[in-house]
Length: 262
Image (tube, rainbow, N blue to C red; front, side, top):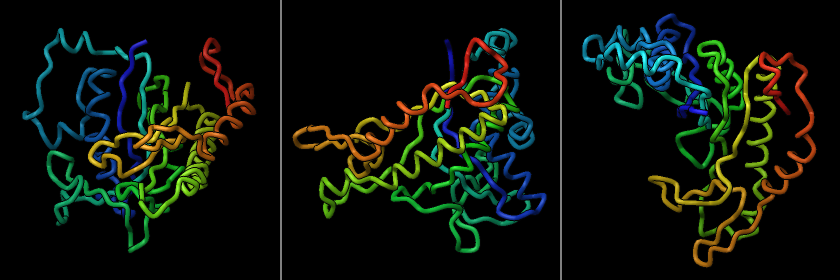
C-alpha cells in the first residue's frame, strides 16, 4: 500500500462572517489540500490558485498522470483545532497563517480571551477531540480514501520539579486519548473510513525543536539510564484494546474486505 501523511489541524472561523468562513477554506487548502489535491484530482485547490496564480509550480501532463489517484490511504497527524481570521479583507498582525503564501488566514487558539479547548503544555495546541471527528469526516467527503490516524497524543512538560511517579500518573493523557477515540468512533459511525489509530508516542523521545523538554510517550524513559516504565496511559490503552478489539461499529462498511473495529 502507498499512502501520504499530512499534518492536520481542524479550523473553525473566529466569527460567523463570510470572510472568516472563506478564510477557513483557504487555511485548510494551504495546510493539507495543496499536497493531496494534485495526487487525487491532478490539480491544486482553487483557493491556492486564486491567491498564488501563476507562481504555483506547473505540473507536466505526464507528472499529473503519474500522480492522479495514486493513494491507497491518507495518514493523518492530528493534535488540535484552531480558529481562523480573514486577512485578505481586514488587517492582521503578523502571525501563523497571516501571510499571502499561507493563505492570508491567521490561525489562533484564542477567541475573546477564551481558548478553543483546554490548553496543554504544548503552546501550539489545545484539547479539541471534536476536531478529529470533523477532520476525518472532511477528508472522507473530499477524498473518499481510507484513513489512518498515524499520530495523536498528549505532550507534557519534562519538568525537573516532577518525580517519576508524577510522570507515570498521566491522567490527562488518558483523558486526551480516550476522548479522541470516542470522537473517532462517532466519525466512523457517520461513515468515515478509518482503518487504524496510532498513539504518539510509544516512548518519551526527542521532540523536534523541543528536544527532551516535552514527553509524549505512554512509556516513561529515564534519559540517563534509558529505563522504560509503563505509564497509566499504557496500562489503560492495553486494557482498552483488549476490551474493544472485537467490537464492530454499527455501520455498513463500504468495503467489507476491510472491516472497521472499535
